[in-house]
Image 1 (cartoon, rainbow, N blue to C red):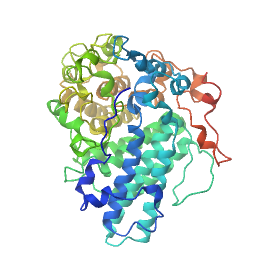
Image 2: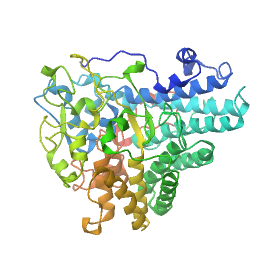
Image 3: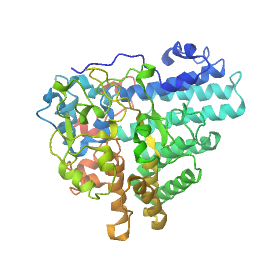
Image 4: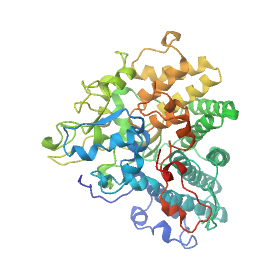
Length: 506
């Protein structure tokens, strides 16, 4: 079993608080009455960090990014010659959508805790905490000005909507509520409706919060207007894929938000030579992230980072157990993505075995911040990136292409390609929408977006794009979702689980 790096989990930005000791000793959110805590502005700030910690804990409890966003379309295979190879075969279970056997206990990969992905309790803890915080801010907290009140409410609303968006992409329909101290049983609500409510909610808060922060310790770590815009863009594009009658409305909204983000000049694409700064976190490219650092003693589960699967010696140690990577992207898939020899992402983000169909492959995108000392078995010290500028530029480009604003779309695409040193898009590269899809696959590889792009664009139904093709029937019955833990049925007579998985996943 992989070792757990034992540190105290503290979101790094908490070190900016006026009283670090007070933050570290904050009472757990689920033990607060809501009346005995929010006495000062510092209490509010501490609570915002705690809400982020709750959400981060859901990512940190398993190999989340790879499992939900990368492997389910079958591009990744495990290396049979790697150390403890049987425990890495889970990537193929994901790649053929065999989730029921993946999460069944008694497997060689039990220590990855994949069954915890099916439990949405943590997200609802964060949602309830955000609801309470907003209610208490409306009542008034001593020392909090009206301007600060608006900003804090916007941060809480962002965390709440991020939880709903995350659950929608995992489970489809979810229970939605925004009232504090909620206790009434509710049925699951259509996910398009849920996201529309989240979009409307965030739109009311968006302008009450700065685009970004001058304090470098807060960039990307605390929610900002840029974070909210990115989340609204993502939710609009998700709905565009499932609410066809209103797709153009969602594309237009995403395009407008993208233009607002670019016009703010609050964010920039860093030179690729500075990629280590981007992936370390708190950079001018970060829109939202869960920052973590060994310097702050963060307790990151050693199997949680996606880097764990795609690096070997000298980036992972000891050498005798890391002579090859645990997994690799199929060479055929990588050749489809990276045909432009001038693309500097090829040499910056991968080793010379980028097209190898074996464990010689390495995703150096996550290898630039190594803190390994001696033979310590640990991952490079990187952030968990949720939204960054490069990804949202391409999402805006996709939306623009879908409303026939090709000229503006191409400008955004070529901003990303120029940073990569790749040749600019021209009409000779073929269909613009297709090119943007593959450009997102290139730019965001390993960041947990690829599978969701396949689902929302319905490309998961086509073998041209996926090794794990879903039929229209399976897709409509929810084969793209995850099973919901049966604990959701407790004390809720209106609750139903996902039919596709209840019926055996076939």
